[in-house]
Amino acid sequence: MKLKTFLCLTCLLTTNFASSSERFSAQDAWKELDHNLQTHYAYLEDFKGYQQTRQLFENKLNSLDSKQAFIDLSQAYLRHFTDPHLNLGPLNEEDYSVYPTGADMYVEFNDNSALIIDVKRNSDADVKGLKPGDKVTRIDGNTIPQAIQDVMQVPLNQLNKAQKSYALNVALGGKRYQKRKIEFIRDTKLVTVELAASYDAINALRKVPKVSYEKIDEFGHIRFNNAMGNAQTVDEFKAALESIGEVKGYIIDLRNTPSGGNTGVAEPILGHFTDVESVYQKYRTQTGTVPFQNAELKDALTKPAQPQIKVPYVILAGRWTGSIGEGMTIGFDALGSEAVIGAPMADLLGGIKRLNLDESDAWVEVGFERLYHVNGSFREDFEPNILVAGDMDEDGKDVALGTAVSVLYLKTTK
Image 1 (cartoon, rainbow, N blue to C red):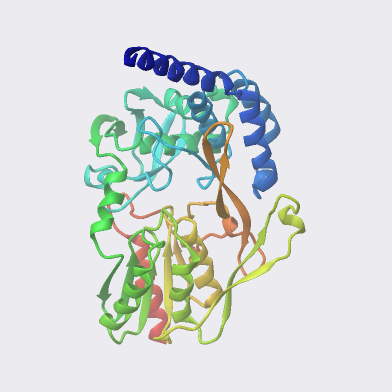
Image 2: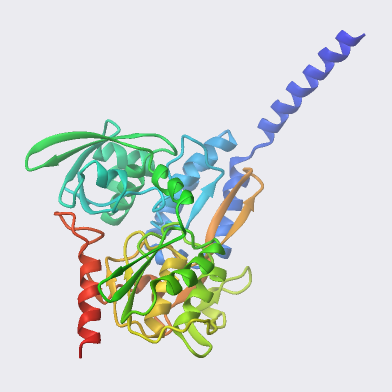
């Protein structure tokens, strides 16, 4: 009797599993994903090749027979938007690391190679000697065209240059928690290096202070360590101000905030730099019934916090300044920083929310809030007013930090 019951349960489980697989409809899953993008994604109109790419992937996605295959190909589809905030999961070990959190170099597509423009300071790429100007020719054994096509799941000739460069930056971040093998050319010499999993350096930051600080001559240099979603960062920033003591100026360093954070951390920090309630950015919210263009333009505010900063300050930003780090950068610019110094930022578009995709047991994160500088320009259009190449030059020097010190000297010695 027990044996019969066991066998029947086994049959029932097998039947249910098969039934669950049969119930998956790629067409319904696509309709759900497509509807959510068109309804909630406030940056859809920015993708100039949207309709062509949408049609291409609709045909591909509608032919799939499993949820995992649908998730994997949908991730490739969303990469065509070149928006690091537009992500789909759940993620597994075969997925690419999330960019720019999982990136330790920034490259651009150049003549079937990946030209290194910037290397993240103290990353494994930096430790292993990669420099701006090096040309990556293979990633984990794949040629550059192969690496791009693996990321985007379309032939190379169907991509523009921006999409090729975006795909390369994703590819160089590697698969989640996996080591990477990089071949590159420097001065006609071919070099191969093995890099640690790109998340290793980010995970290591959990063991260090949320805020680092030092005195450089008569100025305080305060650097955030990718913890802009942790309330402890607010306390550590205030403690840094008190520990540094009296200075003639501050350098606020946002170059290591690739994972973003939230306004609950950003606003109290910005509050040290204003003595009245102030607008630091603006936003419009897209809903299921109101596109962002028709939504009210609202103010994001910060309130004064103690101690008040009364001396000049400059901001450092760059390719690993993401999301709320970008919001703080334009906020500091609005509040009166002497300069924003650095490379172009990461362009994580909008304020995001996560939507469940029930047909595929997945989720998608979309930028549903369109964000603006207080002057009315889009946040993603903002660039430092003193541009430098990146975190370091070919000799490993921190040009941005040196420039910041020079700007403060000029300001404080007049």
